Length: 497
Image (cartoon, rainbow, N blue to C red; front, side):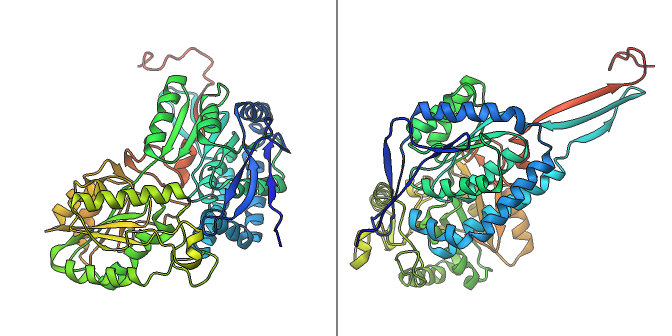
């Protein structure tokens, strides 16, 4: 019996509307190949309507006291809690991650919403003594305007929450473009805020391709800020456009993260952590561990452990409780992953396990790639330098801590890193010398918490951070205020006794 496929629209100025062209596209379940939903395929004219709605709403929303804005966000968090399981199951169906991880994705959106809503009653500026008598000096935060939010498919609720919630609590309005692979998750996220009582025009969603909708948002003259998470290649193009147009831009881009395992490490813990960090979300995380840098004395033991463990990982539909690793998000992503595996073999790396698409039984309907481990990888090989974004990781030999850190740092990215050691001196040296935005000790490279800043160095980002109170600096302007109540002209730096 045929199941009716739901149709979803854009949300503009408080109304659910079709794309002006009437065109649609399909959201596909990557585990089954089935059509999950039909969604509006928008164009520049839809973006313009959303931006105009956001621009109009900004004039009133920015004047709502921040604690009142936060009350709406708290209500949204409560609704997310209530619908966590429903949203998690949808996420598994739309992008493939196993249900346990999908629940974590929604929980991260819940945590971020509660945390940032709390900033509505702080939103701290600061006061400072003036250098002149009878004069007050302080600074406050001000909203920026219309924010264009462009998010990826691998965390279709967590990452939008990192951007949308701080944008709103600071008094900005938003035009949101979710990834084309996960539009329904984005739409359901926006529905939560509609129900929570967010005024019309404050948050708008326009679905469609990055090349059409994303570019239209970036180039729209009334969009003041772009917050983007995605590939480094696209992020740098966005930065170039924003620089030319004078827009503020916050970028969270690629990673080539590494785990260092020293000879004094707890190998049971290291094994568990490497498997989780390399193959969680089928390796489709910007923080995924795609390099394992191993101290020579324990390399043979750790390699044998990993090979045996990887062989036992069970692929399947993420809704099934026995599944360890779900599908990758699409056929094109699967083909990209496999192309890197072929590059690794051509470069002389030794393929220990995996390295192929899995098409047995029901898996033939989806986009499943076997968890893959390479050995004898030289640090300069492409598979050790470039982001693969799939269930593939490399073993790289190091003779000591200094060489391991040098190998870890010798890539163009700088997002997340990890070291396993029982020696506090080695751990502290690694923390000091590793050039990444995140460092873990005795843990894998994934698992950020919302109250700490998230982001990276080098080509991972452009200096901004998401998460923590630091994210407020992305979505607000500083205004310095001077109040002179001396009753006479006082000239700073000039009138000195």
